[in-house]
Image 1 (spheres, rainbow, N blue to C red):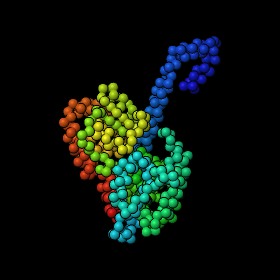
Image 2: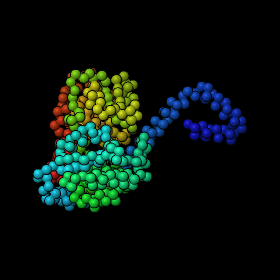
Image 3: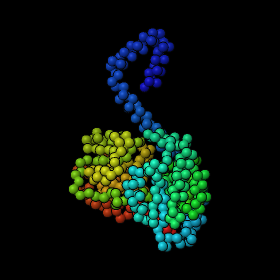
Image 4: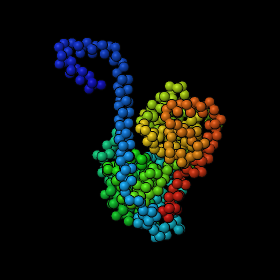
Length: 430
């Protein structure tokens, strides 16, 4: 606003009586509209963020189409088992696990996400699980350059990678000789692990296998940029992607890969008895893209809505998430970025059904293949969301059946333990 006022002041100085006009306008503004200033600034900031977000993901959609064209012209991929052999997942590797489970080091990024079921389920499959912690004991890897939604990873990728791999080496060095990690599982992109530093790890520990959990792989591939998952493919030993179309691309690049959809854990999410459903619809996630618009539309229709996350009044404490899902008639999902039908899988796509919630989310072809139609509700747009919300709140007996189906399917098919066990079996270390 100060910039805008300065421009007005400067332009008025260039015309006759400009100073007098400016003083008159300033008097009116300060005496009549000054109290609106904070609200106007907040509104303008929100709109600018929305435009920036849509521009960003609009560019991603265009980039995605170019990437599809690129890989359409590449040679067909090798068989995954042949690629695994090339990366050392051979008979000698598999022999080690005839009498024990693997020793695993997990370098997670987000404590809130990782400790809501992933770590609990991973630990069941390990002889010993080491976790990445900083020197001060705090959880999670370094991510300099990301603060309050500001992304400056181009400037800090070297620092992130150096700090992360140096700490990983310290943990590996400190592990007993009889219990050195066999697997290092990272959540890696070019902005937090550079090729040089990954090579440093592999040269120091030649038997260590690096697995990359490539969440949000549909958005963060970045074919021609150094900050995405694509940049580090030659320097990992296996990629676990949440985007099925990426698996073929990774194989075409010569890196072993498996499709590993997100999942949840019964250790953290489950139905609760005797809990009152006090909200019509609830949401957990950051206020980005079209999400704020969706929440506002639901509120304007008179639904009792509660949203938690950055931009919605703060993040919900981890230990309260399952209770919150059980307090909602419907749990809202939003995999859309506000650009066409470009959608992405989210953790709540599995956490909400695992909690026994009736989950309503953006139509997603990937999820449609993972859940039966009577387990999850899909909506096409805001109008369809409002229509279906109104319908199900008027027919709560249908919600009861959906909740039963959702929990049954999620608990039987979509746990991290099941996902990871399948991957470890393919690698020969189950």
